[in-house]
Image (tube, rainbow, N blue to C red; front, side, top):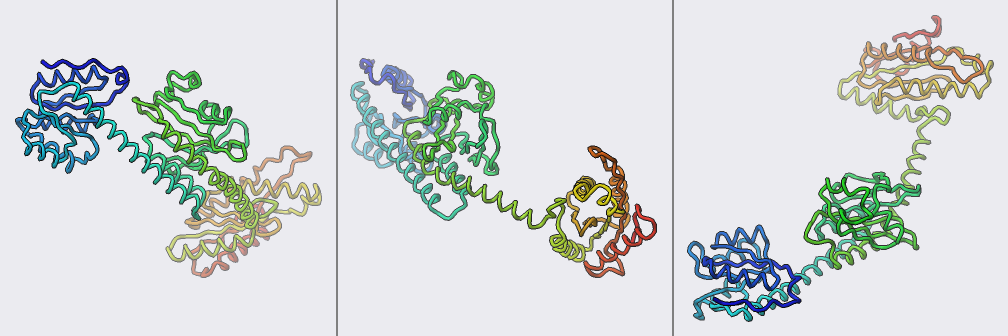
Length: 484
């Protein structure tokens, strides 16, 4: 029986997987013993079918393949691996007891990288394995470098393009998530308020935007902020920095973390954060370096996203100012006219009802005279809140002028509109007057109109009929609802 050579000390830490495929159990046992002594993880397959299954499940780094087997011979296995199963880079060394040139040439033609004639000489086998694993390592490094360069190119194109900053940031996390084996990849913006961060974008959930998070629950981010440098948590369960959150992360199946600060003018404005559940290794130096370069590219996009958000908020504020009444916060008359036309045209097109309530505070001049205009303005503002709190989200509340308000009720027929008007009237009467020196009792008169109606053909006629009904309510005693 062949004896394995003395294990080399430098190989003992190498845990490459080597698959030995042979129908002879004696040869498998001998080779497995050699592989173990050399520091490899040996995997056995008894025939061709078993070998192809093992390749898919265990993904070996090298295959030792016998040619003569009962079901599928080594030539067929090698050919299927290279053509049908898309295993182009895994080295295959043929072990054959037949040293004929034709067999050797055929084996090389169908995809084998090398051959050894049995009986196997341990020193030769060890040297061949080391050589081919070294070649494979160089090939893997070249492929990884190619992928990294492609990722950097894609990110650089995105950053220099005219895309929205948030789109650029999602392109970044998407690119990282596709090139590095991670479960989660996110960009977190550090908020101005201490202890608050915002998940700007995340690879696993594109719908997340500016999700507020409590940084107390993210010790890895706090650590990166403190050192202003890269933080690698190789084992969440044993790292003392993660003690407070290790149980919750264990439930998520996460095992290691990588946090890279995004720095602008020596200030950390965000972080690129990766989380993974892989057990066999943490983040490689290549992966860390790639993420550091990408974090630098993300800096300007994150800054622009923050500026874009500020401008967006300012624009929304300006837009709100343009369509709302400055005193009450209800829609102003101009915006009401726009929405009135839209809702009337929609009701006409689809044959759905549309109701209008015109309402006016009774004897409001007396309130101004008795309590002053400042108190009168406060009453108007609070009455507006009462109205808003007693209508649906789809209803449109506007200040029509002075102490007069209008409410549009989409998809609301005549009966429902009258009930809603009465609800508003009673809510105004119940309106609290606490906080004043004297209680102010406020009542309101209301007029209601509804489309479709034989007398209503335009949006102006809908409002006009409600206004006429309001006039009738005031003329006949006030504090009541009148239908057109």
